[in-house]
Image (tube, rainbow, N blue to C red; front, side):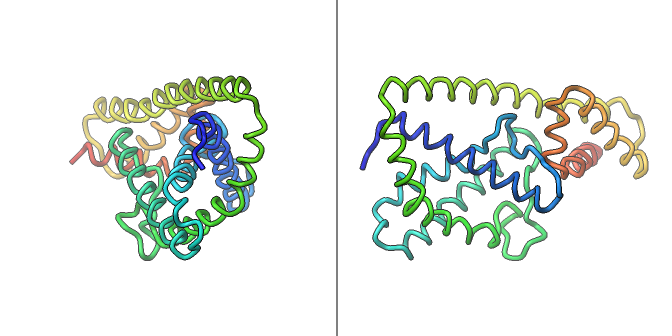
Length: 230
């Protein structure tokens, strides 16, 4: 069944929020503390929403074949994760996740540990969550649906603009510190890495959120400074 564009927008946000919850719960179990995961400020991870929409639109023809649905879910979401990792690294000069330490990974961007859950997620979306969410969304009036989508899109676009500026500060700050340092040794490199992190944490609560959301940021900053020395 084909739905209005607004329905898919709302569905995107539902799964984006759901993905954020998965990330937060995962880190809560691992780190024993709350971490606002995700590149954006708000409680949503767009990659989950995008993956869910792609599965919804592209895999309907496999609805009667669970095995094919599983395989296609793995393929689609793996391609999405790989491309997202590649594009974000090119745009922001930083890698936001790295699976290099896991077996059966491809350039550290995707790995078998995440690919299998993608297939299971595809089955869950098509057989369980989509029918449930569509049944609720269909009860909304056209005006209400439009209003909700406009509000959500406004918040989302604003969030992207602010987050982009915050991430850009990481690159600018590390570049400025390196440019103002004549000679850098191993020990000084460590100090510069901490200095960049300290400066970013002092800028605003949003910068601190990013550093805490991605603890590996320190290694990325260090690597970036080191690469500029070569």
